[in-house]
Length: 153
Image 1 (tube, rainbow, N blue to C red):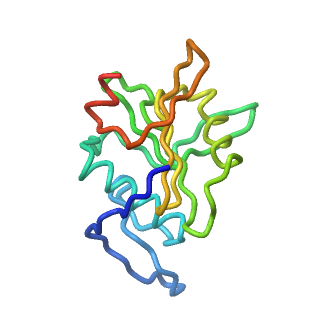
Image 2 (image 1 turned 90 degrees about the horizontal axis):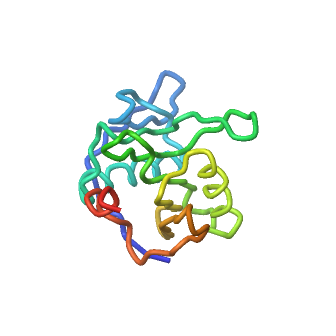
């Protein structure tokens, strides 16, 4: 487990016509409804780009994929230089505890995505793993890897 105070970032919030708060999503280039989970997703995307060197053009929010013939959405995927998933991030609202069931959710999504790194966060607590598909093991990491480190393997 890594407890990490995500540093502040510049964000834009507005009220839509229904008086619901929205936050500017730099990656999707539009305003989206500001839920507690969305705040964590936006904060983590900014942290990955600003502090860990993940290229904006290689980050994808709410990317669709199929699992067991069902359409699913991942919260955040960082692609590697080859365009394949590198880091799969599952975001929960801060009030949701990061449990084994939450970790299993991201691991299940990763059966089809096959990203070598997994991250689960509620914005307050973060767990990150390196996945070795050949050996069938996960190694828990003390820190979220930088883009350069993750891309180098």
